[in-house]
Image (cartoon, rainbow, N blue to C red; front, top):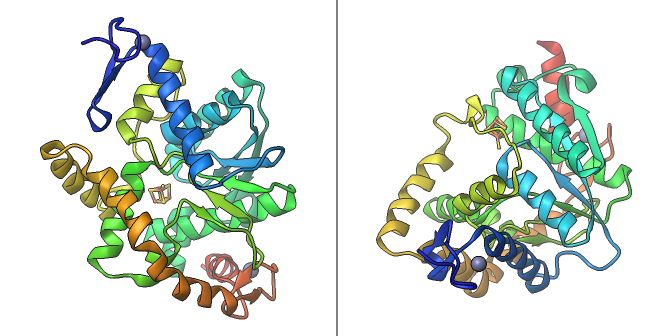
Length: 301
Ligand code: Q46
Ligand code: ZN
Ligand code: ZN
């Protein structure tokens, strides 16, 4: 197997692009794909400050690494979720990366700052762990971005993640989610701009990128993810992709080009109904936001 660019020995094949790459050209390919996504969807403008949501996993650390290499002012943001050893370990990977790159890591801690961890919050709110966790992460991320004066927040969702979420949303025709499933959500209504610069890269590519770049990341899945619907959707899509490479890409980007606009009016109408939470000021359709309710329920437990 030879590198499509330099004909040297290749270390990875990317069937979707019908290409093989050596280590150097693979890293370049990843940077180019991120650069293209940023450009294609107008994600970040020159001089803007980016806050990267870092979990300690491969995607978010690779994203942070690439943004720094592309010359963006990118700081990391890590949230301690209180998921036992998994959280301790993932935090240490995030800190080690920041130190190695001389980058700034902003931190928040759910148990330390708000008195509950994800397992407790999930029980108290009678929500699935990933639902309580996701809402907490979104809330703290938005708040950190606004408090820290960042222009844009970036997450490490890759093509596999986005295709799996899209698949789930289509299976259930969750039109409100479909209206918000875009790699850029503009700022406004009390939210910072949110971008997903890894949408042109797959999960396997991100793992390979970290290996090639010597980035240590937490390999174990979060223990709460077991039974998560998205994992099942990913498996199904992987089988389809193996039969016909490029399907995931066509599914996701076809949706963005041809269908996503059909669902945005509904999502935009919902945004107009938002007002500041009585307790924390975050945008919410109710008097008190879902995160403040979660904090209250967890405290009562
Ligand atoms: S950290 Fe949280 Fe994920 Fe764990 S509890 Fe679910 S959402 S799986 S990305
Ligand atoms: Zn090469
Ligand atoms: Zn609130």
